[in-house]
Length: 459
Image (tube, rainbow, N blue to C red; front, top):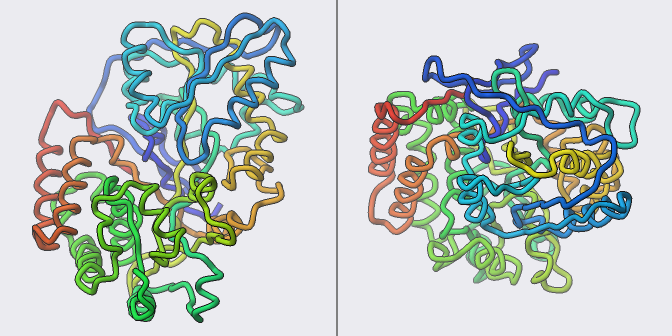
């Protein structure tokens, strides 16, 4: 392995106390909190034998919807006549799950989304360990279930050598454009920031806003521009230092220059007017309607916007433009994964494991690739017939020497809110890039010095 993996805890997949990187190829995270009370480990069953009764599944209904999970549940129940399976999907499913976890009335298996503190659940002993299940036979395969997963992803679902979560799909972050619109105007997706500035001027001259963004959810800007540009300027190490709350990291030269680049795009009028107040779907709809030429987003964009995509419109991926002469790896790609898990108080954990084994079978994984247009955590799933939208992100991942991830957002939600508020203030011209960095750095220092907040480190 020559790639460097700093995998996602955007959804808290890189956990407190994770084992270190293996073989020099990967890096994860660890805590700095010293010894912590031992977590009582409850192993999940293997999902074998007779499966019957009621199976309750709850899932985050995001860019990929929840129809795949529902269909899989119906198919799984059909194969087990004594089983009744239900799926509840919701864009903010974590709001419904939290009180149920407290009350002990939990679902059998859940995908609670990025709004849930999954590693807090682990620390509280509320999730089953899945290693016994992983070492049992996979669905319709001679391999163990563990052997079917990309090991680089599995290790980041572990704490103290135990696996408490399992990944499904892999998201790729970047920018998006309509190739027909670009071809019609003779435009080419920019590979550098200098090319981006030149292109934006041409686009603006046509009466089109060069860039839309999801202002109500500032992390799109942070992860679509700020951090990728800081990584391009100073290397991924600059972002790692910031995520580790290193003194001065949020006001470092790479971070300041990245903020100044965003301010430059703002001052040149390259952002779609009103974007600060737009949701993700609102800004992406403006992009699809041709009001804006580009938008930062993840590889879920086509699936998320399929129902409102105008006839003849297609979307294609390109990497966030690099900064010429930056220290960062020009092939670097930002990725993310989201975990599923089984609560300790699940009423039918055996059926839950069986269901997830079925959903992560190679056949179903390939189906997800083809239907949803995203990469999967299952080995061999990339051999599926990829939709055109996924080919460029897949190629970027395959050619990347560095795959990195935003991790601090899940670790330090209060700090993240400060960063989001600061970038919104900067976009509104209420503060300068320098003040943005000072504000973020002060919030990082406050978080670092707060002994009540567990600390994590990207390794």
